Length: 111
Length: 112
Image 1: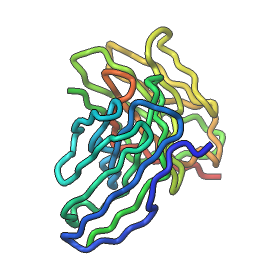
Image 2: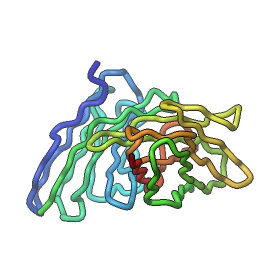
Image 3: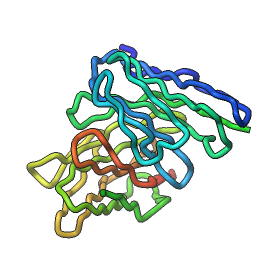
Image 4: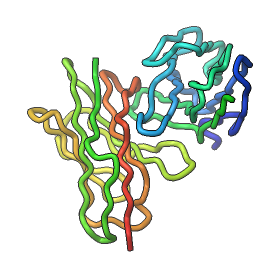
């Protein structure tokens, strides 16, 4: 049972480059979300989705785009990467039972 | 809007000693409360949750937490810790069950 799968696990970008962090879940969860984790700041919600075709902004959405074309996938796009986006990114999903299932994280460095 | 304050960024403790990790929240509406644990280089996993009912909630690995509405607190406790409990612990609040707002985390370090 794969759960929530994130790719890539590590990525180094130059300022101004773009990339997509992939997230897929095989639990048929309606709710999916993206968080970033920075030292001393905990996890902050970037974007979330309550179902296919529906997305909304979280606490720190600037510089990120998302889409939800299928129930399984919720990619996070960085269009113009900046050093401030150096972080560890976590994707999570839920079936509204009060438990988020997290992926293992994607560590992004922007030079 | 909701917010979460974890008062201690680090808690050192010896093995088999009791531990309490503190969490306070602010919210103008009823909320759900959660504790998650993160082991090194891993994602987060749920320890326990308070949705309704009894204010004393028991979770995995011998942890428990008590919801105190008057003090807006949800402190996490364990009567006797093990080396394997060394990890970072996050308190979270949500107006529903999924759009969680996390605290800044408490690093629990258990020494032999």
